[in-house]
Length: 265
Length: 257
Image (tube, rainbow over all chains, first blue to last red; front, side, top):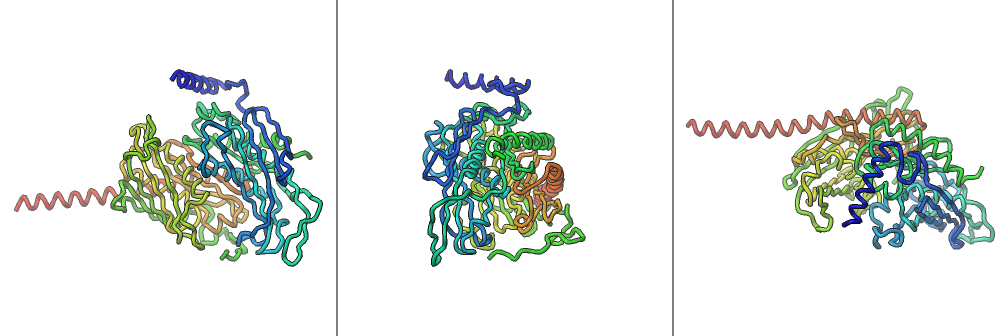
């Protein structure tokens, strides 16, 4: 019981501080936690990356396999994003089929990549209507300390940038893998920026304790030219139109900063 | 199979593929209180969308561990009928339906005084009978009416409408083809009296300036939907009241005889 009381006091403190423009961990309202990106950790995967966002830790692996195209896009490869909230990452995660939180996480990450047309899927077509390559992006959450969306989206982008596409030739309708690799064809670099609303203020990159206090959450994905390419509100609670426009401007700024961690130009 | 790509989604006179103007909503028909068993229900047709919503509760919650000590648990299922789309959809809930069930629940919860009914469940079922783009918005609109019809105390009605970018122009209330072939779609739910946005999603590509205009256009659409919702509620209660007065008159007549 005392720990519950302690948690309540802490939550109250977080909200009170934010109302005065401060945060419990000393960050400014628009600051991210420290971010570390490491690429190419899993040799068996075509691409991989681990992102540490404060204590949140996400590993993304990319696998590429031959498969069938969707009937409405016969000339394009397929992108599939899946997220696993494995029980080792948090006392609140349980084994079992993906729940709605992991489905939402996967779909928000997917939306940013898909809508910004980050992967040149046309180049992954082997035989129109019959055979294409499928890019499997698997998000594996290793430690949950809040803002899984931004960490996962960043790790997914880093993993795609790290992905090596094997050389191949087609013989009698069969794909034969040849030696050598080239980079996965990409053309855009979407970055997700997530806000929490606490005490009627917007903060960037909420950590777990802040997520437990927040009224609601908003994620915007911003592509390389600063256009907004995906958005998702999550959680109960609401925003005003003014808050959303404010968030869109901050997101454009933050996305440009975060992108530099992954895309070297 | 997939439909043929249309050359032009919007012609040179700013007329859309279904004959609408840029900021024009599809025809909307709403009925409240149409199912016998449910505590509240409503039906909406928005263009070719046909959607039913039903509410049960507040009622005892099963399984018990889902009970919340300080408020009612709102549970929501958005589901599409297998025959609601061109190619048969498996009746098993897809990932899309799971996500929509979550965001719809979160868009409606802020409107309900759930704290009045701790440890109970309010169950909301949305069945899409025919889909033509914008089903999550129409689903929220009709679900909010079903909640009101169930007599559940609410802060405001939730009204939903999408806006987006199609053929280079900004438009209100995208239909299925505009959604699939257009550049951007932003579904938004709004409580007009509280100026509160409770659902917000987007896919597609918008500049900062377009983004602002689309948000405002979607809110404008929500305000129009809100009027229609209020009319539909009134229609039901006027009809109920008339039936009641008729009954009373009959009783009086009998008494006079």
